[in-house]
Image (cartoon, rainbow, N blue to C red; front, side, top):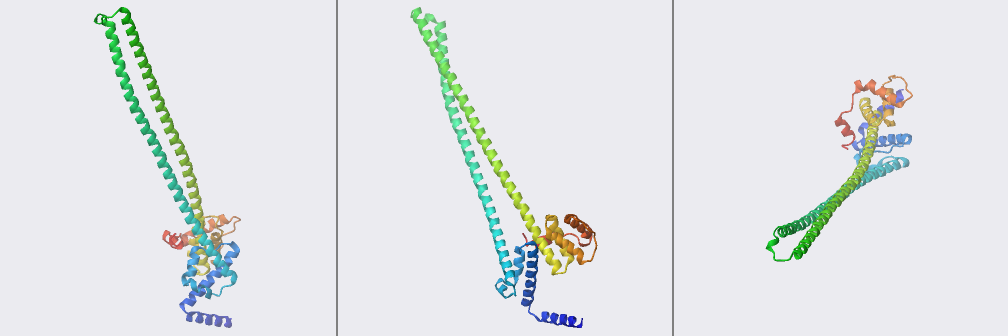
Length: 321
């Protein structure tokens, strides 16, 4: 026992005499080895915040750490994973922006086609209206002339046979004009019906396709949001593990692990830290075959004592993400 106390005293004296940079390097070295051991058990690589913590002592001095080859490979693998995650995140956001822009351009083009069809229909209606007005004027003139001939036979010095022939010709001309008027009217109605059908088909097809694409993008965004929540949960559970293992702060560890568990109940690291908080206090809460029920029981037991992580603390823990 005397030897151990002397050894601890000497180690503490040496540590206090070390420079600030050396202390930080030793602290980072311990953090890397702790996270590497956790990686061997759970296959969780270092997060973006973990790498930022490691690099705070200047990344160029990382080679000065007494890391084993497998620990150095673990750090490099984590860097590549974080870089790939950032790349795919930017790629997904860019793709969504491009797709939404293409949909907007397509909608504008479809709208322009409908407006063009409406303008063409209006021009056709105007032309038909002019023709119909002309035909009505001619018909009125023919009717007036026929009535005059029928009522004023004494005004014309022609024979009865010639009068009857002239009246027949005028009546035939009137019938032809009425038939022409009916034909133009039917064509006008048909043209309007076709235009309405074209507009309805364009709007219905465009609306359905656009709705399907919007629903597809909403589903992708929901999946992306769920993945982001899981990622944030892993970050918080990692911070909780560090707070308990290195900082010896069970309150902060409980708050971080509780938040991580409530965001993602499948986070095994969060449930592990909650159990470690209980073990660090030598408390007995009972046993449960379900990790989820066990975690819920721990949270109910300690929430009055340790409380909940504030929004500001959560934001700091996530690095402002």
